[in-house]
Length: 599
Image (cartoon, rainbow, N blue to C red; front, side):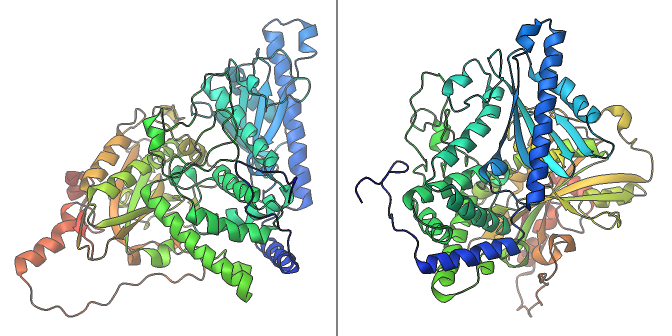
């Protein structure tokens, strides 16, 4: 139709309005999302808004306090201001009851990041009633410095930027690229979270349908364990951009149609052709942007999903060959399910069924066991290790190309607490045993928002400063009993047809060396063990109620074979020191390698 607005960089595929059948499907989709507890009640929204208002008041109080300390005249302080901007899922309008609130504080130029980390934690504590704040952890030394806190049961991720302005008395236009002038890389990164979120909303034809479709896609991705930038999958912003692009191509479509078209289009997208929502914006700012013609590393990205704000960057730069393969299979599976929902009346809940990562998908797993004798030390250590798992994945993918089809990381680690009475129990625990796990504690996941190591891991940068405990709070090695804090990360190994053996000892040694080479590593405090296990040996706490655990297959009678060959085949895992019953001495000698039979 003449005069229809074009959304995005190409004309729409269809401008058809929803049919009666589409509207009926929309009702059933909304009902299912409600049944999945995907929406926050109004009381939760009101509480979040009140907390944001409180944070704004504390920010302005901090701006005044810093200004007085630095001797600024009162007439400048009267107009200094300070603003708070939510971003992420809360700003996009796709948050649920347990969602955190990503929040940016911006202050005039006389307030520095050091001022923020020195003063804001104490202001938060003093302004809160006893018990109102149940968690408050400043993490200043990572690529996006943050204060993680929980206020009235709501998790807040609080970041800060000092703008090169004298006053912020009214909401400034963060979309104006000139706001970036004079900012260092950290401040630009902090501001751009809000700029990107706001721009995505501006670039979709219908905000309401975009939000409903994005809720469905995010829930699906999380249930299928293909969500999270740190482990090589798209994160929330990347999925939002993909859904927004589909909205641009079907500007009048309702959410169920957008979900159906999402899987159809993204499955067939000509990757590594980038997905973006607008043409490249011209700017006089000299900032590094995603540009494969200039930067060789950008040219190696497999799934470029570009942010719609200067500087435009790839939100999916951690995607690997393996994780891309996993995603394409999941897109294909989901496309078939949604077609049955649309055409055969299948219920929407089938789209949101839990993944089969532990139950059916793989026979072989690599477990990365991290441990420390102090929780603060462990938080930093586990986050450091998780941020480097992508290097282990890449090494496994290429080390034994004839055997390995893909390596899939599970999207979170499993946190456990153990109590050891002596050195032998400690050794078993460091090797992954759950025999001495404290029964009163539950295994939790690293995606719990109150856990500092999740944010440390998300820094995804080498050479960052990690918060570690001081020596006075560390447990002395010779004291018993001792608590041990562990996190285990699981990688599923998919083997090519006919693969009989697997040798990944070299990448495992390299990965372990990278981790123990961290400047904060203390051999008396930290531990890392990498081992192979079969699916039937996975611990019970990785499964949920109703799942069927894999069982050990019954041995078939074997024909007579060459004894030496059989012995060599049987020894292959134990030689690397990664069998469950191997001794610690063997393991130390092996360098935590893997070299084993894959049958």
